[in-house]
Length: 509
Image (cartoon, rainbow, N blue to C red; front, side, top):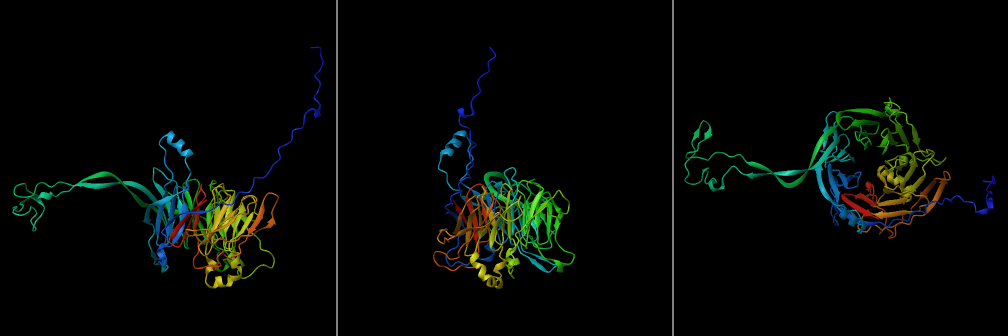
């Protein structure tokens, strides 16, 4: 009131506020993997038929269903059994406090997807082997999926239908035929009048059987569409678009875009076939749509490069928007350099931020915003490098191993020989490198995996190389005839499904 101003607080009157110091999250602890289930386990000495060998594995988006395809053209479906639909809130609350169990699956159904065919124009046999399976969006309680062999893609619908039964038969059991007489012994023969059965001295009036719908249900798989005659070379990939309406199919030289509703027309969006086939230097090995951006897809090549394509740029996407490749060190090139650099599989991470690629020797993780090189490189079976000549002689060097990544993006996995697969941690500061064997005792052949930093890319991302000595704990030699090519990671759980010949193994952590 008297015009006096309040005294200013001295800066030293209270301690200055400090910005909270940023500390990176601690590295994730290695997971302890345990055996969960096995389907189709073979007994000792049992010979495996070639048609029974699993050639494709795929979880659906929710992880409640799993599909496998084999060389015999069959598709087998499994469903998760440890998830219940809670009918009331009380049951849901009780389940929140119940002891959590690992995911478990059971056999659901199977159907014959493809049959062997013969191309008379090219005098070429077309195998029934399932190359890829992709799940589509479920609708009205029915499951939908795409399956393909070398030439033909099929769209399948699997749903439960109520069984219809005949409740009443036309023939009365009391007058069942005896000695050829339709009315039984001592019954006079039927007299026909105008083509009808008369009442007197003959059969009673005909009664139509009554068909009723029972409460029993059975699963029925029906082929809704067939997408054929669009590929001159073997189909190596199919991938669904996030728009739920389209998908792509890729062979060695072309990638086609399909609409799920239209089976007699596709659009060729990528064509790497040169005018003169003698000028061909690389082929397409794998292709996949971005998980959330419907206009973006990636495809890999036999030269070890990954190209990112934007479908909005032009109708024919021969020019890429980004390319990811690792340049080889000077003087390191050999006869096998290009062969082992060929990428056999690529997978987008769940958020679309990274691309995982598998070549013959390594597993690489790429950041889609940084094409200077992979952010992490994992050596899968470095002990085979001195044996590349032998691997070339027996064609093992051309084996195509798949790869997968956990739903949280913290770990990646891929297969190797002797039915073993490797799980690597790709989180910040993680040194996790686990070797597991596709048996009931997955850790019996643990390998020592020394880890060393390969090179620094920036202050935020680090390239890491993980090597394995190739000597197992028991001193056993590695069997090149038993290879684990196909595996899949559950979208929300730490569960890996992998194929060892005709057996499907599952492991959880």
